[in-house]
Length: 279
Image 1 (tube, one colour):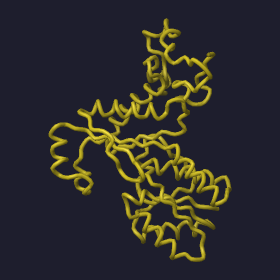
Image 2 (spheres, one colour):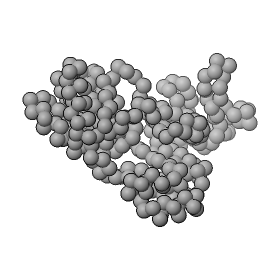
Image 3 (tube, helix red, strand yellow):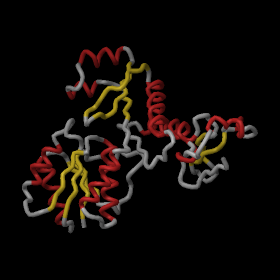
């Protein structure tokens, strides 16, 4: 067995709003200090792993990668591959999922690493922060700038570029920040099938649910033809908005492809074969 380890986030599973929830995959989380990395490796070998692929939070924002490399040298007779994912949060988690699924299928260490790195090429991560307070506490932004941003109700939108947190834009109000993040996600997903999607929050479950609903509606239908409702079985499903039911042919016209047959937003946002079209 090859174990896929995720080093850097103790609560990766807990804060994944939409994403990893399958105990079959050997995903182990530990802190980024040297003793934590050493203990993670020991636990994996004790559980029966003959090799380890360790995917660390970006070395540009954490000392975890360096700690894992040092811990690797403590096991000279064992096969351990330490990978700097150059990302963080659930983007790192999706790389670990890809690696764990490959490990579960019995592939080689090289193929496991290739699956993780291939996933990295398709990842997009965006963050809309409600405050700069905690970035200021970490030293990544000045206290004066953070204070002025909070005073003016400025909401930063961040991403990860070359392993570092990068400020993409500054917008006013939470609503505009959410709308802009959704625009960025739509641009990144245009014409593509969304494989996995995760929304992370910090003790804000109701706000996360609101953002999820907005995002799902936009991803499923840029024209607003579909909405998320709760059916008679208490399941959340997509339904056609009442005002579009008698004119859906015209409402959906903007998405009709001029040539070829790219994946439509509503098809890409749903599970396979949930929606089909005749264009």
